[in-house]
Image 1: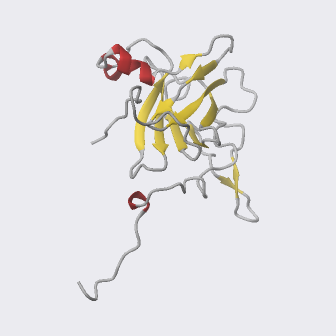
Image 2 (image 1 turned 30 degrees about the horizontal axis):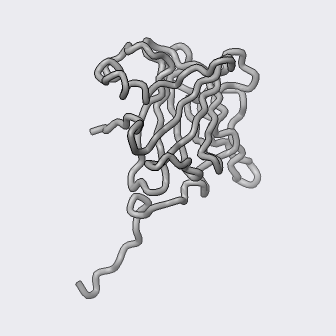
Amino acid sequence: MTGTPLLPPTPSQTIGPFYGYALPFTGGGDVAPTGHPDTITVHGRVFDGEGAPVPDALLEFWQAGPEGTLDGAPGSLRRDPVTGAVIGRDGVDFTGFARIPTDADGHYALRTLPPGGDAPYLSVCVFARGLTHHLFTRAYLSAEPADALLAGLPPERRATLLALPEPGRRRTHRFDIRLQGEEETVFLDYV
């Protein structure tokens, strides 16, 4: 193999944490237009297989709009016209996309509008140290098995996909993500 050039490893061949560099942006978790009366908060923590919080994960969320449409407005990555620096969202348009890093306690918070449809859910993509490929899951805002995915899961596995309303906190849902272990979140495999 002499003379064969070595190629640098791709991101999926390395183990982070490197997701916090250049990927998060200002207002990344603020999908709902500023001051919108229907805004909900979905928050939680990301845990590793031993139950410890993951302080350097990055979560991406995609969702339908309140009417059930998938045509969010552009605006997630506005740039300063002079410097070219990312300045974040415009605060007016619903984009349907969020990118949120976890904090030192593995916590994240998303402020969005409730997705429309028969089985309202948020699509979630998880990037974290130790993962050579990102993981996909869903956060359902209703416990009713209104679609084939939820209906096909046993109740204890179905529970890992539910963003539960928090008692005493109007319009706030809790959705924890467990990467491994007994209560591991159901992850989806797209082929």
